[in-house]
Image 1 (cartoon, rainbow, N blue to C red):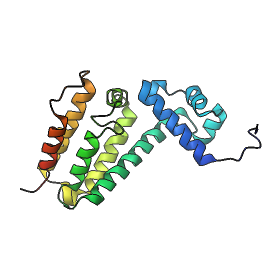
Image 2: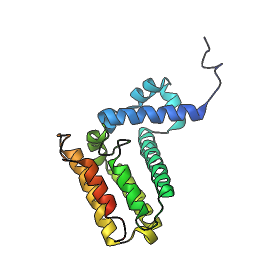
Image 3: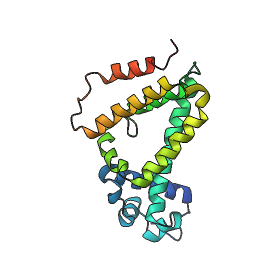
Image 4: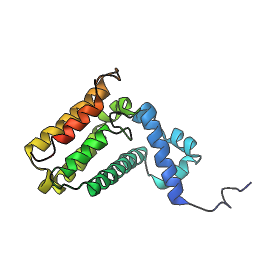
Length: 187
């Protein structure tokens, strides 16, 4: 058996493990479930090891949210890279992300648990900064008011799914997704 003193240090792996553990706890029980002890135990490190990577619980939570946004950015960028039409490409990618089952999309088993994220003021601030930045960055292709309406409709569909316990709230989610994507194409 290798002791902690003899084990090769892998700070990036430990950091990733801490982030993944904290994210899992947040998904399962909201940010209140993300305690220093629970994350350290789940990651198999000491509290001191956790604090080596994150100086506070809030720094850890901020890093979890930031990590989620980096993942979302990567997925949106990938979808935009595959899009053949410039007009509305960010909005189409946003719709696809909103309707997929990864992260907190409409089909995700975690979407209902996203309520915990919605009441966190810091998460809301970070999401707002992220979205505003993306909209500015893609203003040339996605500033049309119709595209804003489509993004808001996608957000509304997502919010309805978060709020309602009935997982069959939409008669045909795929038809709704196709219709919204269709509205992002120039007539």
